[in-house]
Length: 382
Image (tube, rainbow, N blue to C red; front, side, top):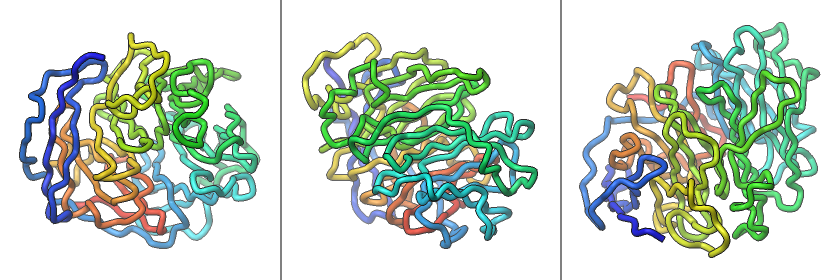
């Protein structure tokens, strides 16, 4: 294993009240940039950001999405199998979609995400990822009815099913369209703990991977994009550059942010379960030709379950543009990383202000939202 340099960033935030240590691996995705071992740098101030409550009347919200160009509505995924609409800041009484009778209710199960077709304005198609009553993962396409605030429940078309009934955890669940127009699908490593079936390095199974699907071709099957991921709960594409950012939930010691440059070809290996973060977890056969180590990792002394976010591209907080935001479910810490090679900062005013962070969301204008399993949705504002 080649030597790797670690850059330790000490980020001191007003909201934290104490120094928080994170380990930043300086890489551009697919390669390592040199860094001074154990160099310590004081994080500079980031823009003042605060949380504005949008609603506290949700039931276990897990995600927020908006159709392209729709600047008036947000669609909120509830774990129980319901999609709610917030229009002009107000939560509508009637759900957009309810599939409560189809979804399982384990701690990491349910309706996990929603994304809209890039051509939603003309084809009215959207896609959901959920675990069914047997625990299997379903990727399903729906169509919005003639009422723009109501989905056509009978329009469901199952695009992909992943058998997942052995264990209820590590389902992944993220859906996102890439700049190539393909639908990207995150699947965890099959569950339990420690990757007992060594799925992480097995390219012949659907688990521990990000797949992509051409939804414009009837009958198309997902193709492998990246593997070696434990549970990529949330990933996103930078809407300006097209870069892929992944928050991959760790096992016993390390959480990680993974990164791929725009246009990266399929076949990247992120290392699990040979590696947890940048550290050997269990030695096994591994292909190193396309091995990519984390852009950022932090230890379980800092947090224990990463929640990947978005690169901010909105207009309300100009000084935050280009920062990648992510959080930790267990400690409620929120960080902002200044691009793929910049420093990591505690996001004062937001960090440790909201417990049980489940997800970030992005509006059509590029503004960011953060949800909590306690039923609340907030917008990040200056």
